[in-house]
Amino acid sequence: MTILIKNGSVVTPQGIHAADVLLDGERIAAVFEPGSTTLGSDIEANADRVFDAAGKYVIPGGIDAHTHMELPFGGTFASDTFDTGTRAAAWGGTTTIIDFAVQTFGQRVQDGFNAWQEKARGNCHIDYAFHQIIGGVDDDSLKAMDELVDEGVTSFKLFMAYPGVFYSDDGQILRAMQTAVNNSSMIMMHAENGMAIDVLVAQALAEGKTDPKYHSLTRPWETEAEATNRSIMLARMTGAPLYIVHMSAKQAVRVLQEAKDEGWNVFGETCPQYLYLSLEDHLAQPGFEGAKWVCSTPLRSKAEEHHDELWKYLRTDDLSIVSTDHCPFCFKEQKELGLGNFSKIPNGIGSVEHRMDLIYQGVVDGKISLERWVEICSTTPARMFGMYPQKGAIAPGSDADIVIYDPAGRTEIGYEKTHHMNMDHSAWEGFVIDGHVDTVISRGRVVVDDNTYLGEKGHGRYLKRGPSQYLI
Ligand code: DUC
Ligand code: ZN
Ligand code: ZN
Image 1 (tube, protein in one colour):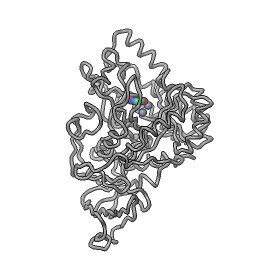
Image 2 (tube, protein in one colour):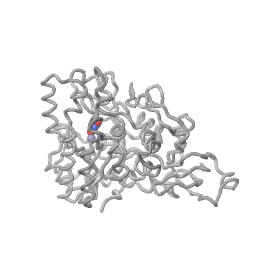
Image 3 (spheres, protein in one colour):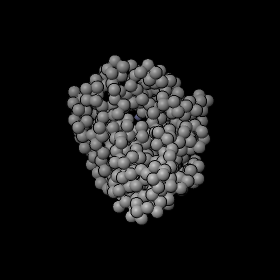
Image 4 (cartoon, helix red, strand yellow):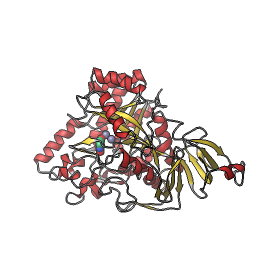
C-alpha cells in the first residue's frame, strides 16, 4: 500500500517546509521538496491513496513517553486497558506510547515485565514500548536491570514518594544509578519527598481535613523541589543520566535548570495538567468533585504562578518533553474510594487522547513555536528513549507514523465529545482547541480519518528500544 500526502506543510524541529510525503508499506519512502513536485506525476497516479493536506500540517506521530494502562494503584487499577488506551491515543494523534511495567515490592522484576508484555500483547492499536518501575531495589533487581536492557527496556523509574509501595531510599537510588551507568540506561525519577508528605497527610487527616484539595496542600512545592535537588545530587555522585517525570513546581524546574546550566545530564518532563489546571479551579471544587483532578505530583496553586513559568521552561528546553502520565480512574467506584479521606483517592488523570491538541493550543496562544510542539511531543521523546529516527521523524526509512493536523479545525474536548478513554468523566471538560487531528497513520495504516476510526487492536507492535541518544 502506498500513500501520498501532498501539498502539506511538513513540520519538524528543524523547520516548516512545503513537501509531499510518500509512504510505502510501513515506512516513509520519500519526502519530495518543493520543485520536485509530484502533482500529476507517476507517483501520484500510482499511489493507492492520496491525501491533500493543503493548508494543513504534516507532523511525525505523537509519542507519549509516560502512560499507565491498567496500573494497580490504591486498591484498584487504572481504567484504560492497552486496547482502550491506545485506541484513545490514536484518536488524538499519538502513534507510540511508552508505558511503565511494574515490579511491585517482593516481586521479581522479570515477572513484572512479563506481566506487562502479557497485558499489551495483541491488544494495542499503536506501537508501544516499556520503561520498568523498580519497586524494590536489591541485588536481584539490579541484575534484572541488565537483562531488561537486552529486552529493549533502557529506562528505569524509581520513586522518592509512596513509602511502603514503590518507594526507594537514597542508598537504593544510588545503587540503581550506579547500575544505570554501567548498562547505559536512563534513570527516571518521581521526585517528591514521600516521607515528609506522609507526615503532612496524617496530620491533615487528624485535623479533619479530608477534602480532595488537601491532596495538593499536603504535597507543597518544597517537597518536589527538595526531592528534585536530592535526585540530581545523587545523579551527580554517580554520573547517571536522570530524567525527572511530571514536574509541576517552577521551583523544582529552577533547580533542574541550574544543574543543566552546569552541564549535568539531567532532563525534565511536564504534563498538560500542570500547564492548564490548578488547585483553585479544579482540585478545590466543592464537595468531592475535585477528586477528578487528584494526581501526583499535584495540581498547584494559581497564586504561585506555575503555569507561565513551565511554558517558559518548555521554550528554553529546561523542560524537554510533554507526556501525559495518563493514569485514568472512573469517578464512580474508583475515585470514590477516597470519599471522606483524600489520601485514598487513586492518583491520576486521563489525557492520552488530548496531549497533541492541548499542547498545540500553546502554539496558538504564542507560548511555544510550531517546531517546538513537534519537538517536545514527538522528536525528543524518540531521541530521549532510544527510538529515533525510527520514530519521531519525517524522513525516508522512518516508520510511517504521520498526523495531518488542521490549524483551521476546532476540537471541543469533553466526556460527550472527543472522548474515547475508558473513564466516566473528563478532566478536560469544556476545553476548546483551535486545531484538529484530521488523519492519523500508524506504520502505514490509516487509523483515523475524517472523525472515523479505522484502526484495529493488535496492529500495535512492541518496540525494543536502544540507549537514549542523550547519553554522554
Ligand atoms: N502519579 C499519578 O498521578 N498516578 C500514578 C503514579 C504517579 O506517580
Ligand atoms: Zn510518578
Ligand atoms: Zn506516572
